[in-house]
Length: 264
Length: 269
Image (cartoon, rainbow over all chains, first blue to last red; front, side, top):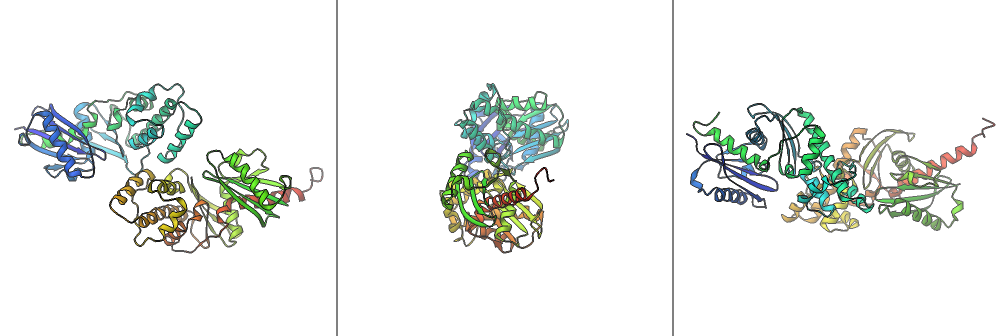
């Protein structure tokens, strides 16, 4: 017997929840900010997704927690690392995925997976803000933009500049000095995006670059970054509007396998 | 012979005026403010004024630091490693390990008994290992830079920072503030974190006494204490250590000039 399952992904900046129906269709989802009370944020994420799905808590037979705050999902029955969840989620959306690239607000991961969506190898940077969403955020703010608007702007660059600093702090100064020299912010933004693409590629190379590549995490919603990354790897990358929910989706899928009669 | 040394650093331009390569006539510094050339000219004027000499009386100008190529009237430029090691040896002749913590980079140089740089290691890639980290903390903790050291010295239980990235550490520090950790403990944690970064660079080149600290951060007594505590060894500092690279440049300039003046001309060689 299969039932309705939920996956809750508590990231460093946002909480995501996905409710999966018996046939594997997405019944509801939610996305909300994470504050200081992570336990409450997890509850809220689930409630919001249930509302979206027009379901009650009692309709859900299994809940899985994942993400940086996964141990705070007290109401769940299972905890799975976000790496396994991203792998499973990417496999679900794009079954031919062999490499998942996840750029989040605070870390970047490259995960190589097999044809079943299981993790083969992974590499990550969680030590340093360089090459993560945080890098883009800091530099966007230095230019006076919101991180949400810089992707399209970067695509309109006429003469992309080179941002050579690895460190976010030094890149911020580099950006400011470009600005004071009268450079076009769009050209600076293009440079920032390719700088992250370069860093991401070296992380990908550590596990082996193999198509298809699925780009996930919050930064994958930035079309400038999608373009920069696919140009850098020399092939298109899969992106889904659901990619921010991949961790939660993967968590739900892992939970589903635990149900009696669930896929193993 | 009067030689001038200019150290065009990322944060500050420092200058030294020397007579015969050994007597300090004047020292001066100005913030770089992104235009080190302008600041360098002002420093040079200040040096001449301080020593009460006319511009033409400077026999030789030697530059160092990241902006060393920006001064067209220079006679010579030397690398930061060389100048800073030379300056440290001038201040403390028994120096065998030099640590230079500046705004943009931290450098360590092992020097031989005769003052030759044997091995060096530098971090210039990451702000967490340079003075920039302290500058940023000063900004968001709203403690003026020159007060950070004295405040840190009041710390009873330094709050160590686990993040190795200046940006991620910022979040960590703000959380500490929110949790009510005393400011002095947070500040000492910042200096200790920088000292640990410097320590690993120092271990790479080999630690042996005497250790001399130079560069912008030498002015912060919090940094000096953090470094002494971290390496468990005495660290030389003096009021002039801040100008070590500029002094080194002036000394090296003097050595070059003397060589030029005593060397036989092209016809005699």
